[in-house]
Image (cartoon, rainbow, N blue to C red; front, side):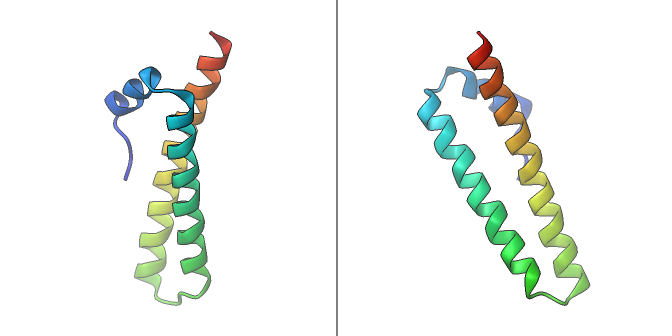
Length: 73
């Protein structure tokens, strides 16, 4: 679930609260994936969960960088 650069760019025009809502939702989803990993023993499922959590982390990084840039402007 990675966001395209075009989608990230569109967030520039959104109110800060909308961006924070999305950031918080992504963090909650990532936390849920980490919880699922704790009780999982199947290697394939663990790989899938880890990949999804990492993808979400990349999206979060992009959005937080955008927020930082918005604050600097």
